[in-house]
Length: 302
Image 1: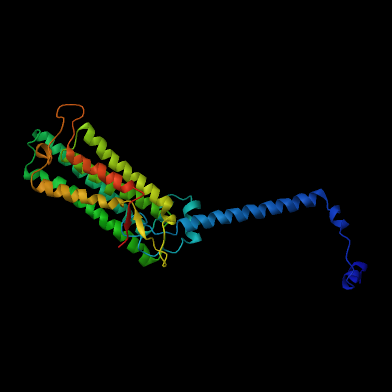
Image 2 (image 1 turned 45 degrees about the vertical axis):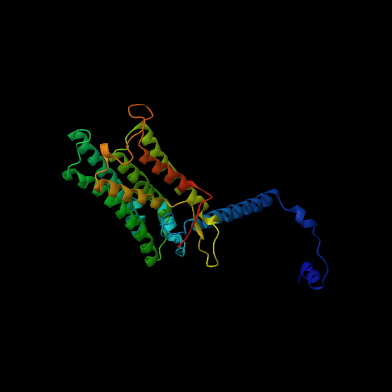
């Protein structure tokens, strides 16, 4: 038995001066090890934050998803596959079924925009105010239909994600972009196609679209800070959700059905022939935009 072991058993305190004899190389190695451990700990913390952020549903910004329970976080395997896979078409391999349904929402919005443009072209080709034949109306009705089809996909993608119990890493961002097309750009384009085509009208339509864009971005950042009830569900919507813009599409459907569009648009035109020419109907897009970005407007959840 060594003298050091004997003193340890007898309770004699061992000298600590030897600790100062550690070589600079050993100290640097220990310091490097501590730095590596700290770096790994920070990286793990960042990964946890990443997982927590993306543990929300693939349809977080939709009108229907805030009352649903959150999905489990994505698997670490999915995260590695999404960030590290360098193979061809690797992005397609990482898509979930809910992501594909969300893309159908974006497709519906885009097709609505195209149908609106076809309607506007058909009116222009037949002369101002003379393109109201029944043969051309199917374009604008198709545009309106596809906005509501986008609403269906916006509802359905979250349901599919919960049935499969699979959260998507890009679901929230993908859903916001699709909603902007279907419920922001598409309704504004329909308004332009039925006659809101002056400079002031166009600016008001653009204002509504930009408010929808800002509302979606704000939601993605602040959703975790919205007060929750005892079950952990958000108590209210902060500002109108962007799918509520479809009430404008319903209104335009009624107007088109009654022939109140183009030269006969409801409300007529003010300051006709001047730079400030505008149609009072376009003010509804301004109001909708203000309601979407309002922080004081708290809409109780159903």
